Length: 483
Image (tube, rainbow, N blue to C red; front, side, top):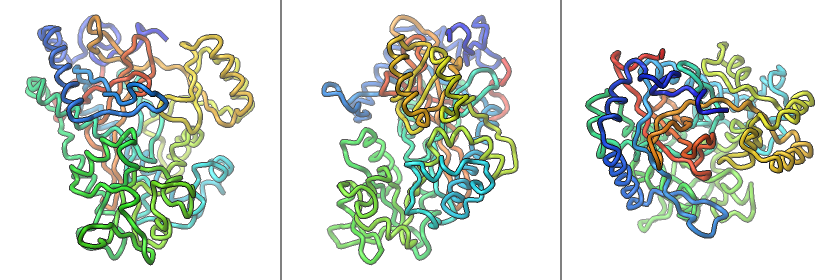
């Protein structure tokens, strides 16, 4: 794909003048000296460094702790765009929760043949111990991060669903804090909706799904693998801002199917655990026996209905990219509606015809592991070398069921402060959707990830990507959707 063909969210398709309603941002970029933009950006990154806002790059001995690069030029969504996006996101998350509830219960969708039973029941992410268990309100995926891409003025697609332990919301909030300090004039120019209420909304969501028998103000904790985890900053940030305890597995104990937190004043009962560790490490009595991160007996307490786990065990099935390929059918089955946010066209390599097509077009496609994440285990055909393509071809032939393929789309661009000049760079977007006893809510913002390398489509921080603040505008005077 070429950058010249990509839709630019400030300039539209022409690059000649700003899209209607976006002229104030173009004027700000023209009138603010380059040196001043760079100074503000460096100040933001210095603040992130001092706060310890880093992520870990596994497998590297040097410079393993990094700051995600921050770009000072914001991305803007109009109120009309956001209204359509949030409606589509909430529809999709309702369907995801209905799907998970069904496959661990009656499995009607499998009986109906809408989704093949084998890609669910034989999936490594299908949590057999959870079959027949139902969390409060039937909500499994309380926090979802839905990755979106844009290809035109009104063309948005879901790239993937993150329903296990989606991360990145702390960057959304910290990016906004940086912009408020360093570019306050932009908030006079644009009616930007705030995102700082997210921790309170998350706390209310946790309270709303407390088990029966919990006190009026349930005891909630955030369970972290510890400070060596790549997202530990986010864990501590969210616990602190929600006013709940940050705990590790050794801080909790299960007695008579009840979870207790150890304190200097004695054990305190725990009602809700916002867990940021994977299913495999939750309970060594049920999952990995060598896990030192979880709590022995935790699953017994969960299955007895004495503690709520957020997100629920087994939600990882909705992250699987083979399941993703069936999401339009899943949405239709559970809501009776067509999906408001379409999928990217996807070929399931487990199907012989799809495999043949993929093998014949490896240099044009993006091929991904169905259970992959973080930008690893994937092939971006147009930018891969011949040797990389042939090596990937062998893997694909050996285990085709582990892969899906998608076209290389012309992701939209946003002006970005590069090393030489302000230039368009490709972006994606991860908004966060909360589901609880009070319904479904999309936070008016999200994490915009930007591919800082010219021409790159890989936005993951572990692969050299950065982040931007995402402005969602309120009112009727915001930019128009059409370019």
